[in-house]
Length: 262
Image (cartoon, rainbow, N blue to C red; front, side, top):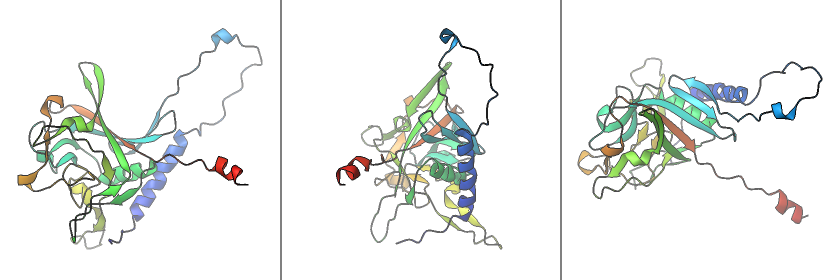
């Protein structure tokens, strides 16, 4: 069993993100009183509930929806439309030759935002002594972009297909969490987040992945399982919002059972 390294920096960032989320949820002060006069009901128009968004870090946002569910938004752009894949999204200037999307982000900020959205990290893939798939909260990944003035939202899986049978990817990702380790080249022993080397949202299994597929997907070039589904991917340079939604288990209501047991 691998011992998890304490995420002290993540703890600080998480407090910051959580505070921002709480502020979004309604710490808005007290509105000034209006004159005590009867109001014409015809003048009252129900206001549509709106989502609220707070910046976590550069190009990373935590969004609170009207139903109080939380999700993470990442600003990215298309960098590849054809060929074999190892990642859906990489960090800018790392693995653009094998990822559909690139994002100018610190992957640690995405990690912290996912925790603030309710996700729990599991563990990256293990290959020895035997293969163990990546684990963690399932994450629904969607891509949103503008096409001829219209906003298009699609499952990220629709941009990826099996290299052998051309079928679309049919698995969600899981929040593996990558690893935080000491930098051997830093005299102060500062820690680095391994997913920042490029493995932010992976299609092939990597022990450094932040989000990975919970299925066996080789990373050797000769055995890559997935390719880009070019006909679904917008032009190179298209700005894309990557939406990460934790798939959380519904909380069990034990109140009724507890009452019946009394």
